[in-house]
Length: 94
Image 1 (cartoon, rainbow, N blue to C red):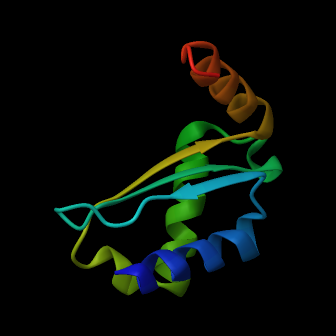
Image 2 (cartoon, rainbow, N blue to C red):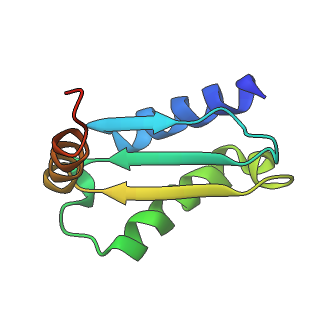
């Protein structure tokens, strides 16, 4: 549901203060993918970043996890810059 992605965006924006955030609409299996970067992730290990995001979800919108898979990729601000540069370098249209 769109309401779920809006709630997810609101919570992540309010608490993680992302420098980059994209959330997919639920797919045919009702799964949602989240790609997020934040300065607060700078000194965190990848698994700690993902745990941080899921702790926010469980604290504020736990129902979103009841009937779907939520896939989270969490980067610090430097890493997301590198990811995006690589994505655009590999695409001949950009």
